[in-house]
Structure formats: C-alpha cells, structure tokens
Image 1 (cartoon, rainbow, N blue to C red):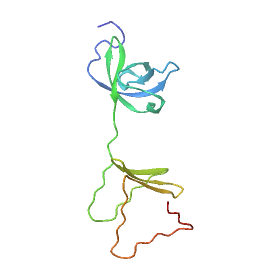
Image 2 (spheres, one colour; image 1 turned 60 degrees about the vertical axis):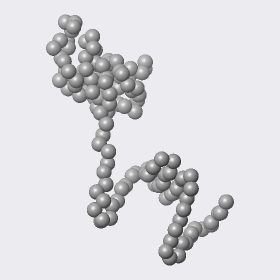
Image 3 (cartoon, rainbow, N blue to C red; image 1 turned 180 degrees about the horizontal axis):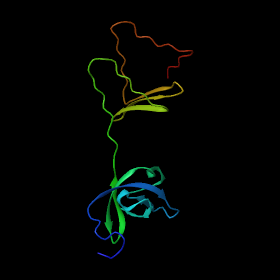
Length: 134
C-alpha cells in the first residue's frame, strides 16, 4: 500500500459517477473522501449514460476501482385484484421471450410475437379509420 491520500481506506465504498473524460475514463465522488472527483479504473463498461449513477468502488494502488454499478430496484406490481396502472412518459414495453407489447406516448400500440391469437366469447371487433389485413 502506498502512503497516498487513501491510506487506510479499505473495503468497498459507494461512489457516484461524476463525469466521463475525453479518454472515456470515469471520475467518481466518494463521500468519505470529500467533494473532489477522482479518476478511476473500472472492471465494467462505463459510459456517459452512467454519469450520476452510484457505483461500488474499492481502492487499488491509491486509485478508485469501479467494481460495478448499483442497480435500481425492479418495479413490482401488487396484483391484489384491484386495477393496476403502470405509467411511462415516452414508451412502455412488456416483453416475454420473443413476444412484446409496446405502447408509445403518441398513441401507437405494437403487438409482436411468433404467433398472435385473438379469442372472444362475444364479439371480436377490429375498429380503426382504416383497417389493413396483410
């Protein structure tokens, strides 16, 4: 271990990705070390989309080493029989394997799958200003 400013800083710490330099390397803010962004090495890909995200870092040769990005919790739906509303500002996609339903803010709904089956006990209607089949 060197006699640098991080002497005694051990273990894994939480840091924020502060910026990505022109060379593609990240600078991180580690709260326990003050408000100076430190140039870091990384074990995982870090890009401009990572700025502001939290990361797990450790020290290697007196330089922060990014071990990974902390992941936000996955949203969960409590299916208790009541109405559930899931909102998105721009686009929402439900995906399972090669099947998906995508809804966009401009009102478009796209249903994709290897097979599409529509069943109804009553009327099965298709309505639109124009309807194109094949």
